Amino acid sequence: MPVTPRHDPSSRGFASDNYAGVHPEILEAIAAANGGHQISYGEDAYTEHLQELFKSHFGPRAEVFPVFNGTGANVVALQAMTDRWQAVVCADSAHIHVDECGAPEKVAGLKLLTVPTPDGKLTPELIDRQAYGFDDEHRAQPAVVAITQSTELGTVYTPEEIRAIADHAHSLGMKLYIDGARLSNAAAHLGVPLAEFTTDAGVDVVSFGGTKNGLMLGECVVVLDPDAVRSVKYLRKAAMQLASKMRFISVQFEALLGTDLWLRNARHANAMAARLYEAVKDVEGLEIPRPVQANQVFAILPKDVTERLQKRFRFYTWNEHTGEVRWMTCFDTEERDIDEFAAAVAEELRSR
Ligand SMILES: Cc1ncc(COP(=O)(O)O)c(C=O)c1O
Image (cartoon, rainbow, N blue to C red; front, side, top):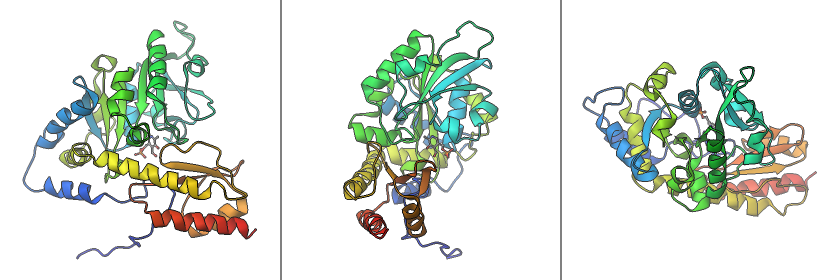
């Protein structure tokens, strides 16, 4: 073997679902697509098949555009949905606002109009705090509502909540975009097909996340209403998101969505978060400030306890001021990881 592992393959933490490796079924799919030559830039047999596969999940009008990463999916989709003078209304906790180094503003050239929310979720009332000033040339024109499903705070919109947002956005002449980096986790929590809270709820464009759900890399821009966008194929290339060897991204989605792997992985990650919640919720000195619905558990801990725990396990502090931390589970989290970690949390809190 030319390369020996430089890390401990049995070591897992709670920092991010991006820390996980690649699901073995995905690695097998990549190997199956290897060998021989295929036309580059998406004209290969795997990408062609993906169109039908996404239609089977999202409906007959769906068009899919594989990209490298989630930031790229957001930038390409939002740029395709807006003109230079337009703006996107989003929660102030949205990844597009806090975690993309300004890419939507810099690369897509749009303005974000943010709204504080209690739980990461927008509502028609919250959208109205920014959706005003139509026809006023002094104000960037609100054109798109962007929500995240599941949210950055681990909460999940119901199909009815999304329908209410879509109806409201459309009544204002706006469109609805979902950042679906963790769309599978939301479907697993809701127990409904993907279309029920996207296409059937009136969403115009959604990104479908693969990386956090077992892929090596890859996300998709899924256009649900082709009239809501323009020139996605040119914008994807101009945003440097057009993979030349696209078959290797597409075949991963075939393995994920052509089987139940997407749901198996998401259900497992969610179940591990639920197990962690059950194991720590009654521990004295710890507060769980948010509902646990997808694959994230948020907790408020004394700072010294967090520091000691972080020496033993990887996880991030979410809010330095409140002491809130985020624990994230993945498709490869094992029950014993949870049990060991929960025991450590209790032990560190007891020993204060
Ligand atoms: C909600 C959400 N959207 C988008 C992304 C962006 O993904 P990437 O890091 O692949 O650009 C992330 C990544 O953490 C995310 O959590």
